[in-house]
Length: 114
Length: 113
Image (cartoon, rainbow over all chains, first blue to last red; front, side, top):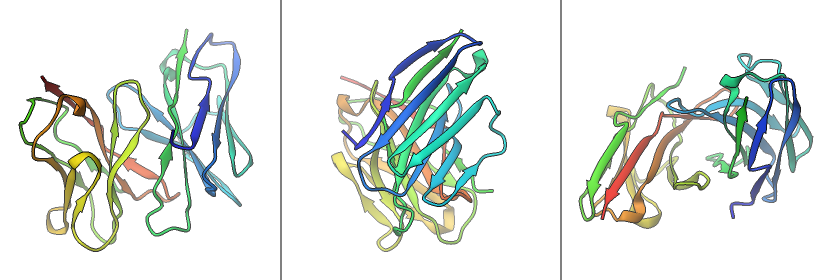
């Protein structure tokens, strides 16, 4: 148990569906991240939230929409996804004011888009 | 922009063999370096990290890594692997403008019993 939980662990959705991924951290961290892990590609950062700000990666399509209501919870809202969006979505958290900013990862949500 | 290269896509070893996985990052200056492991069906776990001090870093489960600044390298080593080390190994550098990790593509290690 890393202190970062993600639900659901598996999700199958059609291209017209709307769904949300949830991440929760119990570590007292002040930053949370969404990463995408696709087959044969490096893990890619999607979004970062710190206490005060949301930082976007401009290459993320608008069909992915993050939400961070407080420092412990992070959501990724999904809408009209494409089959190529099928991947493992990983949430991570860290304390950005520490020397090394070590990130702790959740188990991921395996998403399949039909 | 910072990038990370892992040269081996898939490594197959017998138990008790020695392991070295290569990792290079793209530019110098102050770097924070990490090795993560992902066992089958499990989440990413930190093996070890370097951010200052002794360039030879010891991690969990008998793993170590050496930071060589002149070579922009942070290779992972283990003197004698076990079947339970079968996993995918990711090298990462803290280098994104948003304080994020930049990962290599990963190296899959298969250890034959």
